[in-house]
Length: 466
Image 1: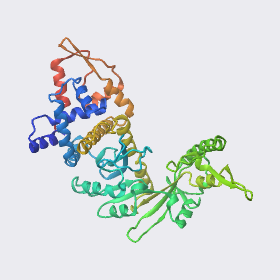
Image 2 (image 1 turned 90 degrees about the vertical axis):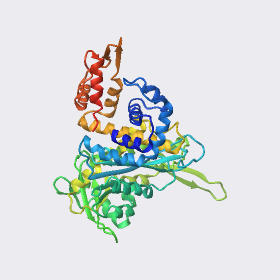
Image 3 (image 1 turned 45 degrees about the vertical axis):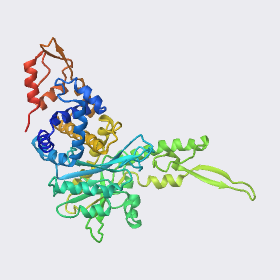
Image 4 (image 1 turned 180 degrees about the vertical axis):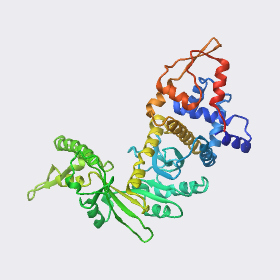
């Protein structure tokens, strides 16, 4: 990031240290996410105190927001100094962030909130590489179509990031035919999921038939209706699914383990549904497909000349209809010559981008509660994005040995006490995870006593600039 900040300083001629401001904002976002004012206060508790003022932070936010695209592109290019990027597979997804305001404002618009809140939202589109490391993001209004809004972000990756050959992987929400056509061009390819319920009648009947499946590991034919519930295998069948513009295939997978899981969840929902008629609470939440009330049917029984009596019952037909999809999964791809096992392995990696959003929302408190200016909101999300990228690189450096909670808790606990201006004492306990962190970062701070001169040497090592 030092290179990017030097470029910004040359362009804007400001006197404050934007690299120090951006670094401190990223550190506090990881260690103690809070407002920018509070981040400035917390930064004074670091070993290196801020050399800038609070008003410099807000001025820097304006620059960071304005140059968000440039910063993303340059950070991607410079990130190759930290190790090879797995840029042959790109995962894509969208999420949204709500604002506790009553009226729409700018790009904060009413839209379909993933948290089912009646507040204006901003949507974020995110691309991630094959190792789960963020690649690029964009923001768009809450009432925009995410499929059309994400295309400019992919175009930015093609042009500014100079990435031309990759596999686009997403869920069905970002896998429309137009998106597939776009990623069928050049050296790109795609793997996107598809809702079996939304297939055409003929394809749906083929997908739901237990015949024609093969085991992924050895292509042995299997009748999935005869498999035991505790079977740990994965099974598939595929067929060409060519359209006017696409040569692709449709892959249907079946997992007995996943089928058992879905059946168990539904059984608990049915138990709750059976209690609904007795309680009188039969209102269905159409926005929530997992609401147990969806299994409740309603009939109106009348006698001639009398008001109808409403009766509720457990809809066995609805339960049976839903159960036929247990364990099944559908994927579209134009990788016609690749092994099915490799295609499915790539598709399964989509969980990592969902985890990216979870970390940003939960661990980094990404919802911009205190900001209203759109440019500063963009800067805020840039800081969250860079914090996530740094965390992911650290996670990879540690060979994915620790959970997010373990890593963040350890980093937050690595504090020091200054002793009579002579030096520092570590206040944390040495453990395997702290040893691994020191090994990954190339310096140690777990000495019994650290003189001021040694601490300065450690700080210089921590700032190795490419």
